[in-house]
Each structure stands twice: as structure tokens, then as C-alpha cells.
Image (cartoon, rainbow, N blue to C red):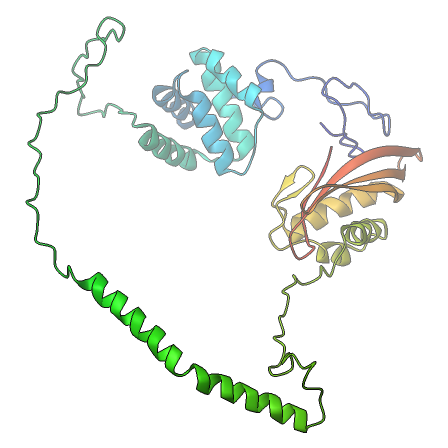
Length: 348
């Protein structure tokens, strides 16, 4: 979790912020660890109560975890898998309350709840009884796979059809080929003297030009073949410089310059998934407003894998409200695209 006062990253059991000393929010109860925000009052209207009852009629312990993952992903939120598993241990009363809190936390209206439930029901092939029609399912006898192993389906043996031998055409083709080769060899032998004579004339012409005929090897008769080797274009950016550009723009509090180093397809900035220009600007301006000054002192930049690097930095800042100064060492992961634009930034 993070401190609400200075944004410092804290452990789940911390009672006070190690950055500014602010008291943290108490550890949530077992029902809140499922992934909800602070306790929200339960619905009191008839419509809200009926919605919770409808949720319970469609959901059960067997599929509630899948439903929580479905609506969380649909709203762009990610919940801890261990907390999601705790949903399967809730009874009907706790499940109804937990669903209502999760709807409020994700900002899902009553109209949207019914849509999510219908889509989830279609995906899970859940059959719900309508008020005017009751669906009766035929009982299915249990199958003991150990006592009744699956037997292969017998297949009737089909007669194998063997095509009758066909008459081979062109038996004398190989003789035609051998005859053609022999003809070419004979023509080459007949014209050998003419070819050798032409070469000697060329050699004699070279001697008339002033070259040494005895030492001439004919190597200059034809131009040398020029082969071009393909090489990949040189990379026009370096990760070290790009990371320092991002850090300097953040220290100077120049958001437009800071944003220019990010890819249009940026996937993550710390805990914010797929941040937009306005959302990230509001977030940074809020942090800058709480601090008198802040600066990063780069310690080192390490290569991890393709377009992935770790920044080791010492971050110093002073809080406006308390005047306290703090220095924190941290490791930040940077992931770039092939054009040198930032795709992901998050702490390790």
C-alpha cells in the first residue's frame, strides 16, 4: 500500500509512514481483504436488496471467484488472487454483502450489474428459472470411471483397395536422356578448337597492349563481383540517456516534456494501468504539490533483457506540511519499445 500523505510505498502491516511519519489506515478486516475499499453502508432500498438477492441466485461458491475476476477485468482493476479465493469460503449472507461492497468499489450501477450478470451467465451456461416457466432437468446417473472404464468404439474393418498396376509409359525416356547428353559432349568436342583459338587471340591482344604474355593469367578479363553486406540500422537511442531524460523532466516538474518520452501505447506507470495524459498529469501534480522539492540522484542503470533496464536511484524530497526531509533508495524498472519510448515504469 501507499501513504496517502506523501505517496511512500509501505508494507501491508505498517502503522506509520516511514517517509513522512503519517499514521496509516488500520489493517482491513477479513471480509475487506477480498479486495474492497473501506466499509460501505449496505443497501437499504427495495431495489438494492432485490439486486443482491438476484446476484445470489445466479452466483454460488463454485463460480463466484470467476465472476469477481470477470467484473474486475471489465472495469480495468486487478485484485489479488489470494483475496479472490476467499470469496469461495463466504456463506450466502456474507456473499451478498461482499458483492454490494465490490459493486460500490468498482463504480458499477444497478443497471450495469444486471448486464454483467447476464453476460457472465451466458458464458458459464447457467440456466435460471423464469417466473412463468420452470425448467426441469433430467437426472443424470453418476459414472464411476474406475469401475466402468471408457471402452474404445469398435470400428468395422474396411476392405483395403489395391489399385491394379498401370502400364508404365515412356519406358525409353532414360535412353533419350543419355542420347542427349552424348550429343552435347560430341558438339563440345567438335567446337573445342574454335573456343581455344578465340581465347588465344584475346591473350595475344593483351600482349600487344604491352602486358607480359607469359605471366598473364587472365584474371583481369572480367570485373570483380562486388558483394554488399547487409547490416541492421544502428540504434539511434540509448536506454541510459532516455532514463535520465525522464528523471530530469520529473525533477524539473515539466510534465509535457516528461510525457513526450512515453509511448502512445504506454501500459503502466507504477500502479496505474494504461495511464492517459490527463490522469498521469493530475497524479504527478498532486505529488509535486505536497513536496517543497524533490530530486532523483541516479546511482546506476543495469541491463536486464531486450529493451528492459533497472534504475537504481536515491530520491530526496521535503514535505511542505511538516518540513521533514527524506532520502529513499529504490530500484525502478523501465521497459522501452523499439523506438526508445517508455512502455512501463514501476518499482521493484
